[in-house]
Image (tube, rainbow, N blue to C red):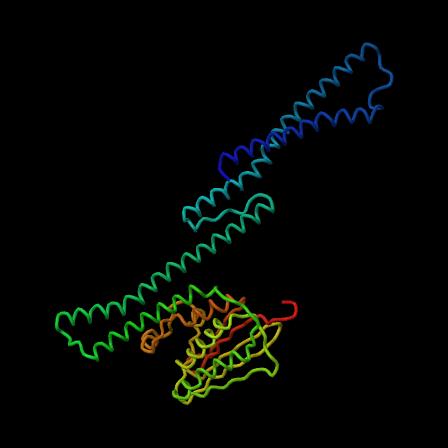
Length: 355
């Protein structure tokens, strides 16, 4: 709404309220005299009759004048009360359009306008948070890409300057850097496609068992025991099987990465309150309390050097959260501390007869 429109509305409301009170000031005295004829004396002297009528006319004129002034003042005040918050909302929309995402509208006016202002502020806060995440993501992506690209550039420059010999060992090192780049790009693509899903009836019991079967050989090579526990009855949810399988594989791979030989990993399903909970628990490294709130953030690592050596880009758990939220669920993590293992839980709504 433009400022000109708001001013026009303010003027129209002022006239409308002023007219309503003016009409009321005319009708009320007339109705009063019609309904109270006994108010006028039945017998009055002839010479006093004219004075009585004049006094009544003067009183009515004064009443009309006062009513007009009050009507204009009241109409102006009411219209200002209605249009001032709308003008601030209009300024807010222009500010947001100019990418001033810090702008907030004061909660003023009627209850309905306050609700609109509150919704506007919530929208602005969401946009500001999204913009902050976007900027952080761009910075993180630039940082992650810079490292392998710098290695590739430096090694290729050294080969061109005959500092290094282009043998199989050097090619293998360059190949490892390209694999890291491809893995990072694939993870970013998965994040971008997290909400693209095709939901169908899915038995979580079969899906969890299939994910465990895929990673069980890797666990055996690492000397880690993998145990699966599922309910006897099917656990049915509406899910994209491919996306949910990736969630399970990411959680199991993360558990294997942080569980030493002779350790254990448990994956199981429980149900409660129309909700299915997939839990992946390990006896591995554990997570310090100060890191728990940020575990699902993009590119977040509790140990940067260790995770980079093991090939992690810090996106696996961010992909888990994005895909679970796309299924109207949420992901959680708990840990008793370093060296005491950790538990990752995925909560999904159960498929019922009503859903």
